[in-house]
Image (cartoon, rainbow, N blue to C red):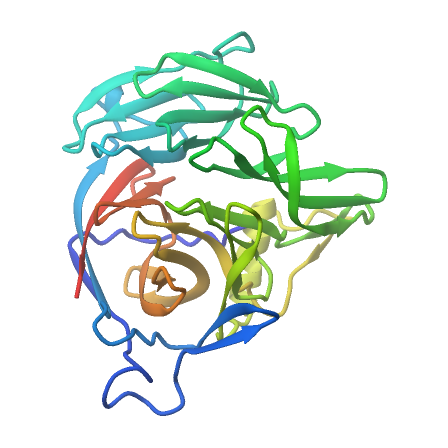
Amino acid sequence: MTIKFRVVIVLGLVSFTGLAVGSRPGSAAGQKILIKTEDGVPVVYNPKKPAPPAGGPSSLTLKHDLTIGRESGDENYMFSELRSVQVDDQENIYALDMKEIKVRVYDKSGKHLRTFGNKGKGPGEIDTPLRMEMTPGKNLVIEDFASAKFVFFSLEGACVKEIPLGKYQFLIRFKFNSQGNIYADARTYDETKSVSELIKFSPDFKPLATVASFEASTRRAPRALTAFSPAFSLQVTGKDNLIWTIAQTDKYEFTVMNADGKTIRRIVKDYDPTKVTGAIKDKLIEDSFGEQGIPAGYTFDVPSHLPAVYYFIIDDQDRLFVRTYEFEEKGDGPWFYYDVFDAEGRHVTRFCLPEREMIFVSKKNKLYCMVQESEEGIPQVKRYDMTWK
């Protein structure tokens, strides 16, 4: 669950500088990145502030350069409810509209190229799209919840194949490696508990190995609800390494595993948890139940502090962009922080964006965001140019 704030999107040039602490001359004492070997695995311990190594980038400038999404006019540029954004090697942009059951495709200048997708439960049709991913083999894959299947499309929009999900129909996130294997956060339920498993599947969706698992929640009374639900957040690097974390908890750490399932690195970051104030609690309740508040007879568990990590993405240089729950109030509302780690797991800089802008892809020094609702109430795709120094 996210905290919804009403914000105004400010366009233009924004610069963010990581504090070069502990690794460059004149840095603050005691703020160093420490690398220790524990049980044969290197563990990168990051301090609270960025500590970019000498010779590497320590600042990031974002310049807004493209917005797709209009309130009226040409329907090819209008969205009803955006769900996912993907980008290919030619910088074409693919936007999944959950309500319209359409994928709209644009070139790098924002010109509409084509639209595909049909609603239904038949072959090649989509009923309830939850997420869209792009495979290294350059197919688009849409998870259809209602039909419990993956539907593979070519980038031109032709249906390539379908894979039934079987008993793993409750998938939260999924990613592909270069061999076609699928890593997925799969939920299973019984009468007493809900279990989340990070599973490696074969290309035809046969389970090969359980990477990690945890009990998501012990079934409580039907009227007992909680503000945050732990879930796996995962990415696959260009070298087929899996990076994963259990998001929406108080742990700020990542595990890196090679294609054989061996842990090759852990990344840990110190941080100051954000205290849940009365205002934040009120917004959590309003976002969950509306203005009427918690219904009579229900309980709503809100922790004393916000979680450490919401989710993360990686770019084509295997840098991690981690969306945290830390925010700062600006003149136009709260902006949430993203921590940036290099491919070795070192915290090099950070930046913040309005809460409504969810980053989805970073490729060729461009950052692509999905805006579920702009200040004018319009779903949009937004792109920033990134300059590293």
